[in-house]
Image (cartoon, rainbow, N blue to C red; front, side, top):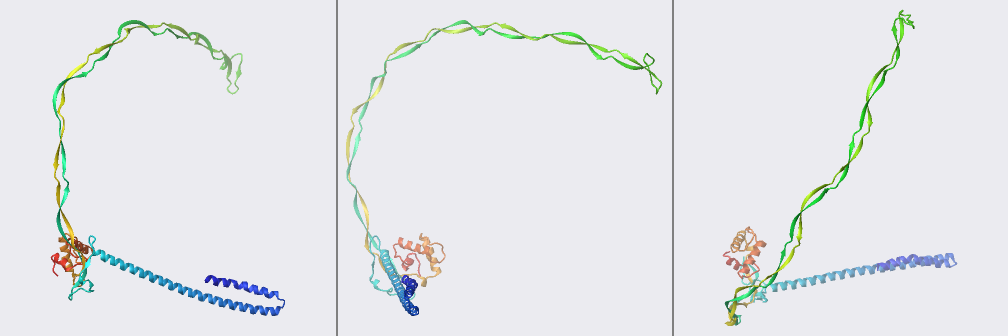
Length: 398
């Protein structure tokens, strides 16, 4: 419906444009304009009415959808309640069944309240377990049969000569014959070597100039004179002859060289063992060997003997259900007549009976309830609450 509303709103400009186009087609400007305005007003009014109708339809549809949703939820709640009731009924029926037996109720099941109740007493519908009877029956444990025994064969000992080792041949090796022979063996071949010859020297004397000839001035008079005007002395220029020294030098007379020397070959006398006769093989025949052994021979064959085994029977105890389990009102210990001291005594009694009630704190918690149910099951007492019969079985009095 919302889409229709939007579609109508979208058509408004188009209709207005169409009306304007129609008005423009007329040649009478004023008359046509008046008609056009009137037509637009009529179209706008029609569109407003149409939008109002669309809004009413949308509201009606929303209300119907809401009612349908509430009806669907109510139906789902009713179906779930029916399923829960059916499950509770099945659970109650299953609680009252043991080994495939459906629990039955007593004549008081039709009553909504416990019969003959007194003020201050608390009751609960508990499940009274079914009762069973036992009988014995002689049952065949093993059928009659027979046992087969084998009588072994008997044997006796005798002596018999048997071949221990057959005739054979043995190959013997005849060793080779050797003798010692002397032989001259070349140890080192002839060769040559180069021997160095030292160089030869001689001594020569040579006169070497030590100081050349030169002139010096000396005091006195001579053919050449020079007067020193400063001192008035006379100096003579004298010629000093050259000086020589005789040096003895070692001079190479003959250079160093080499000389080839021949080395003769070397021989050694060696004693060598030489085979004069090669080894050979000789075949030797080995005769057969026999031995006497003890032989165990069968004197009588094995035999078979059959022994009858009688049948065996066993006594079987069968348990049969005598009465069905049922639900019944039983007086219980509840919060109305329950104290911390009573719960503490209950916990101590359960612990002494071998059922763990948890901490001895006087609180009837989940562990204590589990211990009570375990005790009731082991003693085949009604389960479902802390009955006075359970307290009496535990040796408690309220």
